[in-house]
Amino acid sequence: MKLALALWLSTSVLAVQTEGPLNEKVLSARALMLLRSEQLSDKAWGVYLCGGLLVPDCSASLVTALDKARTLVAAPQGGEEFFYVQALLDNLIRLGAVVPTELIMQFDPRWRDEVVILLARDFKAEAQLLKLERQELTIAQWIAVNNLLLRIRSEALFVRMLEGTRIEHFFEVFDAEPNLSHGSGIGDGLGGMQLPIRKVPAGFPPVGIYELHTSAAAGTTVVASGPCGTYGIVTYLRTEITEAGTEVAPRKDIPAVKPVECRNAYLAAFENRPEAAVEIFRPVTRIRWTTAADFSRETSAAMDANARALQAFVRHARITKLALPATLTIDPIVSDYRAIKRVRLPAIPPRKVTLN
Image: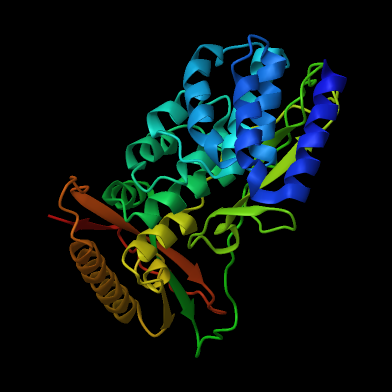
């Protein structure tokens, strides 16, 4: 059966390449005929023909087939049922199909990378994306979900980032004029991912497995871009398994360490004020040491200005549908670069900032 289908598929590919659009109806009919088969391997070949040849009439049929495949979400990994679902998701992605969001979510978390890729095509998927954002995600999944929420200016994204961020005011104290050459960087705290250990069943066509990345390497496709520095662009890589029995190593879905710098970047991007990520949420005040009284006066004034800027920033966001946190806290972080430290630096208390 596999050999016959492979020969038939090769013939179909050659026909569409040589005869052009006139064969689209024929190819669509053949693909749909295979989709109506009782054999999962036949169905999978029909799905593969749809996606591999970009048969335009197939999208609705594949969506219908995916709807019927809801019952297979718990199928054993590596079996025919699992790979039939994988084939459906793979070729819906290849066709550029838009799938109803509630249907896509039926296949989370087992096919989460594929779910995120398909959700990216729907600008009305806010509820589903917000649901995903609450789950334990890899860094690529978390960045992708939030990039998509930012794309639609989700108020819930703004509130969640505000609730989860850490506002820190850095004070650097010097004996003389400070040297401004030093800076700080963002650490990723991220883990890598691998693809899943499974064997493609005999009689099945090639199938693509997807992996989200936070880099734009060769051969990847952009899912969503965002403001989170090095990790701003999320892409996916499709790896096609072409031979039955091919083993693929298990995916290690390491939960993301969500950098506070990313949260601040989303808040700033929501307001189209990238400078706010530093100026409001992580400002640096450099102080030339004179006396303890002057130090307390300067730091208090800086914290006051930071609080006012934070209130104005949140007010300008005009969040109307959701409740904002009642207060936020600005935590002072002091670095003492004085050569002579006979006088201890006065303590700087955290600042509570009321938002309503």
